[in-house]
Image 1 (cartoon, rainbow, N blue to C red):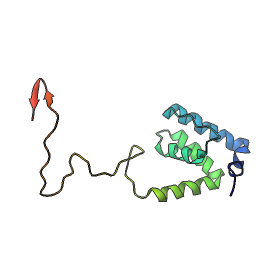
Image 2 (cartoon, rainbow, N blue to C red):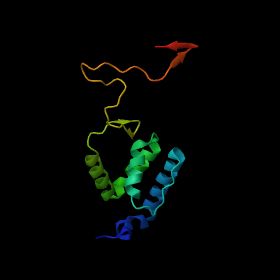
Image 3 (cartoon, rainbow, N blue to C red):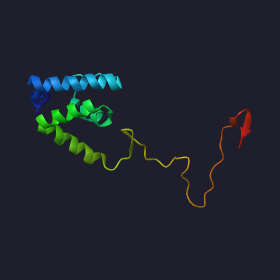
Image 4 (tube, helix red, strand yellow):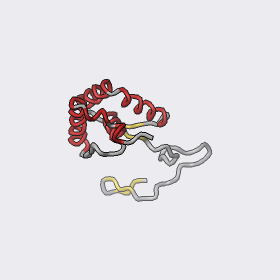
Length: 125
């Protein structure tokens, strides 16, 4: 079993550490999340935020980091396989449950609203 220190030996390279710091800074700016270098799943969390971001600079920085550290790309590919075909909206996974408003089976009538809807002072259907 490998230790966390041996898995993170690539962080001792000053150039790679600079890229990680840039990613962390941009993630903190955009998402308000502070990632620490001692976190157990730092690489995975960096990859997750790089997928969710709208910042092209963060995407470029993450891609540069993946090119220089080959095992980061492998870990991300394994996670993509495990997620399967999850639907996403703006980088967030959409819950796959059948409780949608518009989904009802054939032969089943749509249920009436439980709450009173008021539009311009009038009660609507």
